[in-house]
Image (tube, rainbow, N blue to C red):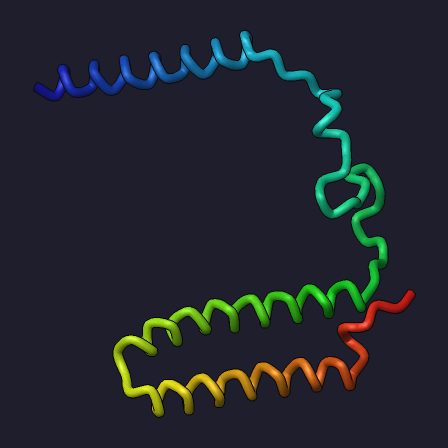
Length: 118
Protein backbone atom coordinates (compact mmCIF):
# COMPACT_ATOMS: atom_id res chain seq x y z
CA UNK A 1 0.00 0.00 0.00
CA UNK A 2 2.79 2.42 0.91
CA UNK A 3 4.63 1.47 -2.26
CA UNK A 4 1.53 2.38 -4.31
CA UNK A 5 1.15 5.76 -2.55
CA UNK A 6 4.82 6.59 -3.11
CA UNK A 7 4.49 5.66 -6.76
CA UNK A 8 1.42 7.90 -7.17
CA UNK A 9 3.23 10.81 -5.49
CA UNK A 10 6.27 10.30 -7.70
CA UNK A 11 4.14 10.22 -10.85
CA UNK A 12 2.23 13.32 -9.77
CA UNK A 13 5.44 15.27 -9.13
CA UNK A 14 6.96 14.10 -12.41
CA UNK A 15 3.87 14.98 -14.46
CA UNK A 16 3.61 18.44 -12.88
CA UNK A 17 7.32 19.09 -13.47
CA UNK A 18 7.04 17.98 -17.09
CA UNK A 19 4.04 20.27 -17.66
CA UNK A 20 5.83 23.26 -16.07
CA UNK A 21 8.96 22.58 -18.13
CA UNK A 22 6.94 22.35 -21.35
CA UNK A 23 5.11 25.59 -20.56
CA UNK A 24 8.45 27.37 -20.06
CA UNK A 25 9.80 26.03 -23.34
CA UNK A 26 6.73 26.76 -25.48
CA UNK A 27 5.67 30.09 -23.99
CA UNK A 28 6.05 33.07 -26.30
CA UNK A 29 7.21 35.53 -23.68
CA UNK A 30 10.02 37.90 -24.38
CA UNK A 31 12.00 39.80 -21.79
CA UNK A 32 11.83 43.00 -23.83
CA UNK A 33 8.05 43.06 -23.96
CA UNK A 34 6.75 46.57 -24.63
CA UNK A 35 4.05 46.42 -21.97
CA UNK A 36 6.43 45.26 -19.28
CA UNK A 37 8.92 48.01 -20.04
CA UNK A 38 6.33 50.78 -20.11
CA UNK A 39 5.26 52.64 -16.96
CA UNK A 40 2.20 51.35 -15.19
CA UNK A 41 -0.83 53.53 -14.37
CA UNK A 42 1.15 55.55 -11.84
CA UNK A 43 3.34 57.04 -14.56
CA UNK A 44 6.66 56.22 -12.93
CA UNK A 45 9.43 54.78 -15.07
CA UNK A 46 10.17 51.25 -13.79
CA UNK A 47 13.86 51.49 -14.69
CA UNK A 48 14.51 54.73 -12.83
CA UNK A 49 15.38 55.24 -9.20
CA UNK A 50 12.58 54.07 -6.92
CA UNK A 51 13.06 56.85 -4.38
CA UNK A 52 12.12 59.82 -6.54
CA UNK A 53 10.06 62.52 -4.82
CA UNK A 54 6.42 62.99 -5.68
CA UNK A 55 3.87 65.60 -4.76
CA UNK A 56 2.70 65.45 -1.16
CA UNK A 57 -0.48 67.18 -2.26
CA UNK A 58 -1.21 64.27 -4.61
CA UNK A 59 -0.76 61.86 -1.69
CA UNK A 60 -3.11 63.88 0.53
CA UNK A 61 -5.80 63.99 -2.16
CA UNK A 62 -5.48 60.21 -2.45
CA UNK A 63 -5.99 59.81 1.29
CA UNK A 64 -9.01 62.15 1.18
CA UNK A 65 -10.46 60.09 -1.67
CA UNK A 66 -10.03 56.88 0.34
CA UNK A 67 -11.69 58.40 3.40
CA UNK A 68 -14.68 59.67 1.44
CA UNK A 69 -14.90 56.42 -0.47
CA UNK A 70 -15.25 54.55 2.81
CA UNK A 71 -17.85 57.07 3.99
CA UNK A 72 -19.88 56.54 0.83
CA UNK A 73 -19.81 52.83 1.56
CA UNK A 74 -21.27 53.69 4.97
CA UNK A 75 -24.13 55.61 3.34
CA UNK A 76 -25.60 52.48 1.72
CA UNK A 77 -26.91 51.00 4.99
CA UNK A 78 -28.79 54.27 5.57
CA UNK A 79 -30.98 53.36 2.59
CA UNK A 80 -31.84 50.02 4.20
CA UNK A 81 -32.40 51.76 7.52
CA UNK A 82 -35.07 53.91 5.85
CA UNK A 83 -37.23 50.84 5.20
CA UNK A 84 -36.81 49.30 8.65
CA UNK A 85 -37.02 52.20 11.12
CA UNK A 86 -39.13 55.19 11.96
CA UNK A 87 -38.82 58.18 9.62
CA UNK A 88 -37.78 60.54 12.45
CA UNK A 89 -34.98 58.20 13.58
CA UNK A 90 -33.86 57.85 9.96
CA UNK A 91 -33.81 61.64 9.48
CA UNK A 92 -31.77 62.17 12.66
CA UNK A 93 -29.24 59.50 11.66
CA UNK A 94 -28.99 60.74 8.09
CA UNK A 95 -28.70 64.39 9.18
CA UNK A 96 -25.98 63.59 11.73
CA UNK A 97 -23.97 61.58 9.20
CA UNK A 98 -24.26 64.23 6.48
CA UNK A 99 -23.21 66.97 8.94
CA UNK A 100 -20.06 64.98 9.72
CA UNK A 101 -19.32 64.62 5.99
CA UNK A 102 -19.89 68.31 5.32
CA UNK A 103 -17.72 69.33 8.27
CA UNK A 104 -14.95 67.15 6.86
CA UNK A 105 -15.22 68.79 3.43
CA UNK A 106 -15.31 72.24 5.04
CA UNK A 107 -12.16 71.45 7.06
CA UNK A 108 -10.35 70.23 3.94
CA UNK A 109 -11.34 73.38 2.07
CA UNK A 110 -10.01 75.51 4.93
CA UNK A 111 -6.72 73.62 4.84
CA UNK A 112 -6.51 74.08 1.01
CA UNK A 113 -6.24 70.33 0.54
CA UNK A 114 -8.86 69.97 -2.18
CA UNK A 115 -7.70 72.95 -4.25
CA UNK A 116 -5.01 71.75 -6.63
CA UNK A 117 -2.14 74.17 -6.97
CA UNK A 118 1.17 73.70 -8.66
